[in-house]
Image (cartoon, rainbow, N blue to C red; front, side, top):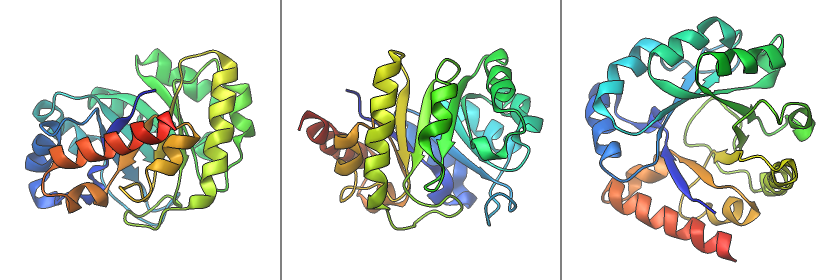
Length: 223
């Protein structure tokens, strides 16, 4: 299995965002995760497509955007134009999920479905032919630095079994409180992409962080 390390820039120093993105890019990461929050679906506000677009020339790795907002369909095209090749959306924010997933595909981007802790897995059974990634949230969306919810490990395993059954190459990502003390549980349960926020900034360098977290995940996957 893979063990992709994907930093969330929500933890970055926004006054030095371009420098932080460049440093992450040089640290061996697999892509960069942009958390978009609208203050309605979640109780926080971050940034939109213009900020993401301004950082696209700085990095060489792909960008993914996690849209925690009501009516996300209205800006799908803007996020793709900003340089995001993967759009992650919460099904409960979509008026017509199938149509929304097809729209993302039609824009040339990959489709990700984000499941909040209380969102059931059942939705996935009806859209496996349309999606490229499932994100299992291991905190409630809205703020960085929250405590990891260990109770999500069985849900990760349930999603892994469903994705394996589908026979399709669908990534399984986890996000929320992921760091050296928590990454092994989701990895052992079947996750192969790990969104890391504040934990990355606690190492001496991003390169050291990525190497250590990837090694821990691979070790857990191997059993």
